[in-house]
Amino acid sequence: MNTLIIIDMQNAWLHGVTPRFDKTNVIARIRHAADYTREHSGQVIFVRHANDDALVGSAGWEVIQELPFTPGDVFVDKTACDSFAGTGLLTHLKITGAHTLIMCGLTTEFCVDTSIRAAASHGFDVIALSDAHTTGDRPHLKAEKIVEHHNWVWSNISTPANSRVMVRTTSEVFGPHF
Image (tube, rainbow, N blue to C red; front, side, top):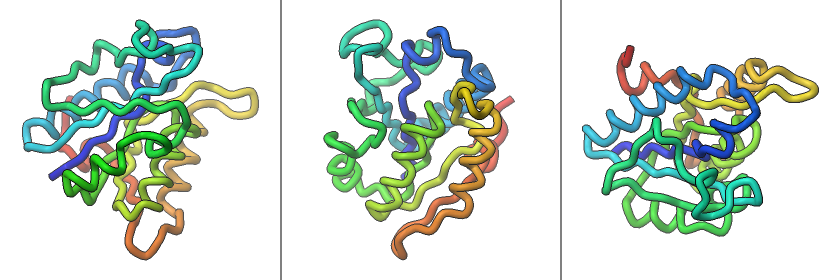
């Protein structure tokens, strides 16, 4: 069973003031991945970050409307970059028998990177969708280069013997979508 984890695709960060690299295409690819996962009896997990900019229950905290959810989808709420820290995500994944996690979302260098590394440390195989994560420009580096850098890091990272991280495009994992 495929397990797709969509990280922090929320109004506060995608429809706010910070432009996001390739936002429209990233959203379309994540939607394709979610639709495919549901059609093939996989599970879709939305991770939502809560802080002062996205208070629980506020419009900013909600997942963007471009990524509609269905009754079978799971929601995990967090307050740290690590989707596993202080959440029930690990317990849920163990109960459902997940082995490979397909991960995507926002932001590349914070919550996506931290969650990918944590998943591998917890013994999961991870597929990082190379074209389905995004970020904004930083004072020292453009968003496109941050995405490129992290795809390279994830392709070359050392993981525990019982896990691995693979970097694939959305089309490689889920077939063409456009």
